Length: 147
Image 1: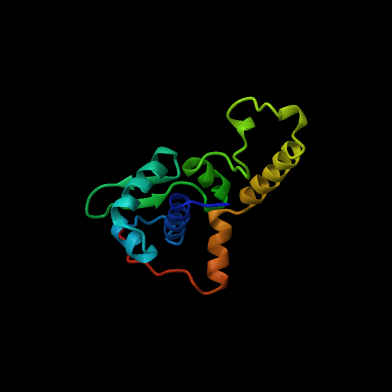
Image 2: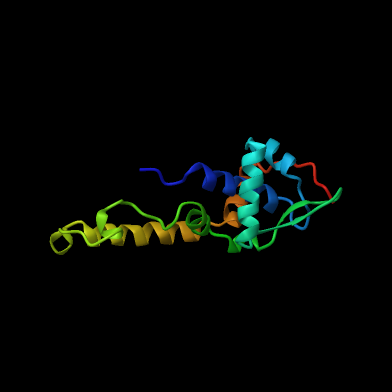
């Protein structure tokens, strides 16, 4: 079972870079180098984050990207839903159409319960909480900030 895809993982890492420089714009090149994310991939990902209101950008010599929201208000669940869709444990047919076995499916309600638990846990994990974990471990990156 794949919990996080590459886009979600890269989005978390990019937002951690931005959150570690509050109020400052970082260039995509700096974020890409720091987080070892392919530059062109990161550019597209940042545009998606702008579209969803998580990041703002500014052009020019003092431009770049900046986190628009409070890091504690950006849950990993939100990022999963942006880049992967709803958190799902199973790809059962009952999600796409009525399953012939729906009335007798012994797992259906348990799977839905587990998905709610997983969703709630991902809701508790925020960019802010991850940044604090990195700070506690002494692993917060030092960027070349563009102001």
